[in-house]
Image (cartoon, rainbow, N blue to C red):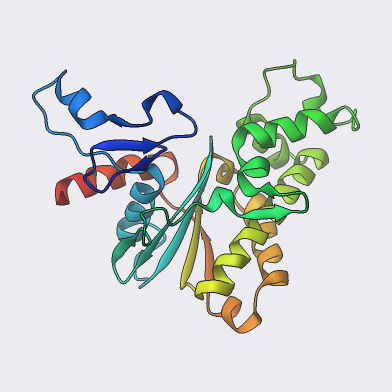
Length: 237
């Protein structure tokens, strides 16, 4: 679930994107419809666990995983365990401030906000292939595909997005000197076109010795990461 999940893995304590589920014992609600047992996991935690065990995190002691999709989330795995923090709220990567005026990373780098920023600027570049996309039909995949095809405007929008993500990644590196930072989510379909500006932005803002001992990598499991991690965690529950 894209939500804060209680320690009993049953209750959705809070969800920005599915607000009507906040406070619901979702495991009980699902159990009422089926004889199966249910455990609920935060999607970023689940994806992080999958990458740690079977993807880009294999062999690392500690990782930070960030997902850039409908929302922006994050998760820490320290010494082989998902680290939730004192109150259970650790990893809220989307709330990291990245711009004057209080803009958080999610205000800029979530799918909806990348599309919003692209739509608001595309009319300034009539040479972009995205200029002809009808209002309301623009998607992240269209932006990524245009960038891969050499569309300068789309590449610029990915570069700017990567710059802001890198600012937030630098905060993680500077505070924790984490071994690996792994980036997943829909925008990572762009591969190096988004990963390179993330790395360069983080490099400029990180304490250099900490940066040089941290790897910043693209996730290997793509859209399946959260599902794989949920299956693995449910098996351990």
